Amino acid sequence: MTLFGFRVPMMASLLVWCVIWEIVGRSGAMFLIPPLSDVLVAAVALVQTGTWQAAALTTLNSFLLGMFFAIVVGIAIGVLMGRSATADNLLGIWVNIFVSAPLSALVPVLMILFGMGETTVVVTVFLFAVWIIVLDTRAGIQSVPNSLLEMGRSYGASRFALYSKIILLAALPEILAGIRLGVVRGVKGVVIGQLLVAIIGYGELFELYSRNFDMENFWALTIILFAAAMGLSALIENIEKRVDYYAGVR
Image (cartoon, rainbow, N blue to C red; front, side):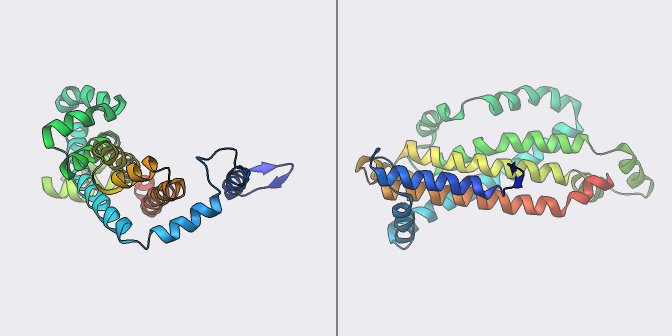
């Protein structure tokens, strides 16, 4: 970003908003927005409490389980749709519907089906993440040139070798992009699921802090959650960059 002829790093925008947050908090204009410095102090204290650590473990467990099933099922369905026109026609409309649909509205239905517990949150994470993984995997599979497949067959590659050593590797950049986007959506899913269930994990803490107007801890919990989502996204993006040469070769 360039401002008045000077190159300004992107981080400067974040720093500006941090300063504005601190000024608004110090002014007392809005009691719901405490000073950022107080929020950061609260965040440091919060992560040392047993309450936060137990909630974080519960949230992490639900998130990892939901993402595991989303990645496995999403890649499998994406490969099937990418390789079979019949499957693409049958499943494509449903995948696009669920990508566009407000999935938050389904959580109460999931609570009826699976109860007021962790299973509902895991299913919510799965539903939020799986569809974008399906679409990106499908796009990657359809981008694999036929010349690579013909080369593999000419060297006597088995069907398993074709998929594991050629098709999946050639589609890897798009698959990783789908997983990265799925992780972000999965974080939304775990928070929404726990907020609506409101008795486990981060949802319980958000409910507790908002009900008691403990805004320092409320915003501290929000910042920790955002930082975790950005960190996971950056990690997968770094892995993406390391496999970009597959797309170049393709």
